[in-house]
Amino acid sequence: MIQSDEGRPLATIGYLDDDMEGNLIKYVAEGMSYSTIFLREVMASMFNKHEDHAEGMVGYLYRAPIFKEDRKSIIAEGIKSYVVGNHLVAAHILIPQVEEALRSLAELSGSAILRQNRVGGFQYVALHELLKEASVIKILGDDMTWYFRILFTDQRGWNLRNNICHGLVPQGIFGTEITDRIVHALICLGTVRHADEESTL
Image (cartoon, rainbow, N blue to C red; front, side, top):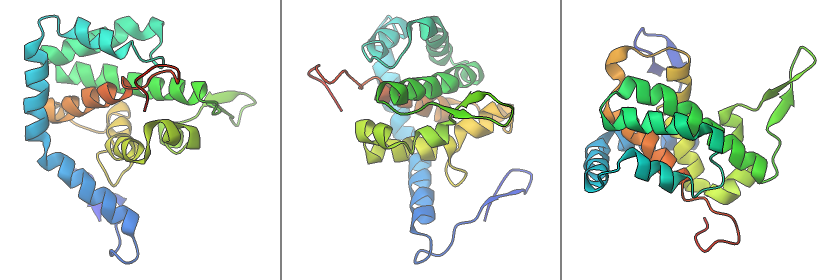
């Protein structure tokens, strides 16, 4: 049983023979926690190596067609907050931008990003649904989409998107362990290229 800090049941993982997926998610999520110290060294080295920090990162990301121009200043502000150690602000700014980039990827690859709602209109498909779209999986690959699901949307994993955007976590949780992963997710999305470019996933 996976519980919240208040003891509320969040998810149940069965025995290995009956719940391979749940056990795999738990194993990967734990491995991500153990490896945070190594990711921290990589991220610190990368940002310390370049003086332009945020500008260089935003320039890298915007080589990918899935980042919209009118979100550029928002992403830049999130990266700047990350670089100066304002992790609470960085997480709240950048997680929605990861979701928007994945929505853009789904749309560009031909998947529907809207579904009918109960009041006669349309609403955007949620992130956990986007990460199960065949077109998104085809471009990002199984490993990356699983990583994003465990990091952002699965209650058996880190579930950052839902926990943070719904206000379910206390201030003390915001640190490099979380924001390193969020920025790493952006870096992964920055590898997406048009089919006619040399570097493709």
